[in-house]
Amino acid sequence: MSPFFQYFLSSLSVDVVIAGAGPSGLVCGYYLAKQGWKVNVLERQLRVGGGMPGGGMMFNRITIQQEAKPVFDELDINLQVYRDGLFVADSLETISTLCSKTIKAGARIFNLMSVEDVMIKNQQVAGVVINWSATVWSKLHVDPLSMGARVVVDATGHDAEVCRIVERKTGPCLRTPSGGVMGEKSMWAEEGEKALINNTIEVFPGLVVCGMAANAVMGSPRMGAIFGGMFLSGKKAAELIATLLKTGER
Ligand code: 48F
Image (cartoon, rainbow, N blue to C red; front, top):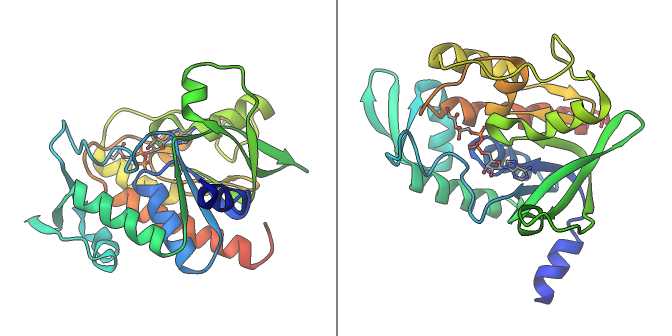
């Protein structure tokens, strides 16, 4: 018991908190931890991996495009050639390897922990408000705790939960055309993939968005069982955050 509590207590103030342990959140955590930043990844569910275990229609394989291959090679995840420029990975191998490498790089992953709000100080996100998922799901009236961070990442997938919370509580303040969450558009895999990297931005001071949440926030299309963009978006988010932290902007 006490090893967990020591670990938890020493995690209450970190450089980066990532909400969501899907592909984009884990990859972002991996690259940041590898550079020595103190990172927590918070996952609401019992298990990590987000949408990966189910692949497309529960076929536990995920499709990867050429551009994302270097990330898979770095992580030593096997890829099978599908056809020109497209590869297939076993989603369970991908999750287990990515999770293991992310923890070994130094990131701390907390499962069964939900982000239910953010802290905003001086017009800047300064951390997250957390609770046990079981408490949230049972709608128990239990006050949450907070976790301080210089940067928070919304990697919560299609629902872009953290960005929606900021919009609801602060008004139309996001760096999007409307100032709010634009909303994900219907499927157009190629366009969605293309847009994703440009949509991976600091969307509010101290709040970076990546993965499907980035397309949802910026109003871009969804893209089925192609996952390479999620990995590239997580990597781009890590690069962006490292710059913000290094320059002392956050
Ligand atoms: O949905 P998810 O896998 O997000 P992603 O990294 O990848 C998207 C793909 O899986 C797929 C796709 C491919 O074309 O479209 O959907 O963008 O993972 C998001 C994770 O965030 C967790 C959620 O349980 C999931 O594991 N999550 C969501 N809201 C919260 C959260 C929250 N408030 N607190 C903690 N975890």
